Image (cartoon, rainbow, N blue to C red):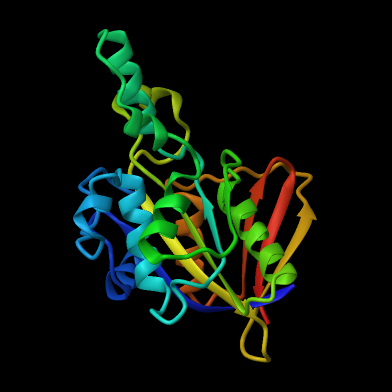
Amino acid sequence: MRVVVERWAAWTHGVDDEAAWRAWTQQPTAPQRGDPPDVSFIPALQRRRCDPLARAMLYVAKQCCPPEHIATVPTVFGSRNGPFATTVAMLRDIAASRPVSPTRFSHSVHNTQAGLFSIWAGNRSPSVSISARQESFVHGYVEALCMLHRSRAGRVLFVAGDESIPEEFEALHNECRGGYAVALLLARDCGDAALRLDREPDEAGTAPSRAWPDALEFVRWWLSDEPSLAICHSGVRWRWSRT
């Protein structure tokens, strides 16, 4: 299935607009730890419920989706770890014999960001949350294509991201440690410059050797003149090409 990227937005600490991202593509680096983006557009009562991952995802969702679509567009949210820091904070409370916050517990699941988005945007359209380890961006993108194919909507908002890994788990994590978020507004191909995604066997078992996640590798490629992008995981090569 061919689709058009109508709009995109991305954020990581210190890089949050198109000019900064174009500069980043010249010398890509891994996301760094830092404060989440400013989400003062969210009402204070809702904003207090947002952890760093939710703030980053809602920030790029707003930047990417025009106001006329924000309340009606179907959505896909993809994250490898979800609100992991919230879970770790609750475990610290349990270990210290402190009471666990019911609100914090209710925001420790993988569809937290989708729920907070639907409340803030007043969006009652279908939404799917994806977690597929290192392949979360790829499978989130595929789910967005499926949603676009089976729904009557002309576009789907795909948001991918992860927050900073708690320091005590850094040694066990094999991806970047800083937080980031990427949003893509995907639309049906109407004859404009479109993207095609193909799935191929990867007999060599190529593994990513870069220091940044797949979502940011897609942004790097999207802003380049390269004709195609290949991301390989688990013996499969996912190839995007411009048509």
